[in-house]
Length: 232
Image (cartoon, rainbow, N blue to C red):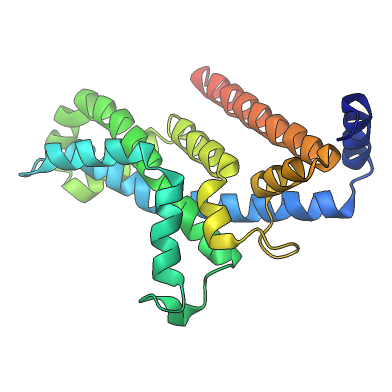
């Protein structure tokens, strides 16, 4: 086990010198997580907005289900996707197992309920304020959803940020479907778990520092943007 002081010093050296191994892992993590969040937003934003404005039998149950899926266990998602993408599974022909694509799917499955549930709450509150106006304008359901999503775009950054935070921090599902293969599917969280188990703390600490810095930076950027928009 390395001395903690030496491990921290080495971790900062890796960051300052942009160690290729560290940079490769960080870039893959961002590629996977940003792709997953983009896919989740494409589904979650309209789904959440639809649940906010639509009224149909079973809507309440669907809202409860989407909200409950926010706490979906990552290892369960990883297991299900592993069974689907394995050679013996129904989607095995796609050859996605142990690839970044499988990791993107896993993260998207986990992030979509978060984005959808938070979007529903934001749009539902906004719809209460604008419902009468939209009716007077003769806006149909699709137009109402599009209008409310556009008007709430800055508030929805919170949902996007929450989803991105979940994606970047995910380890269980991506470990199962990605396999933590060096130079192929090794991302920040899986690399931290591996390096810590080996007792090699420098790289783990360097990646951990960057992960925390990303989280703080994203929160600060979104809060700053929302603050500026509130004064526009």
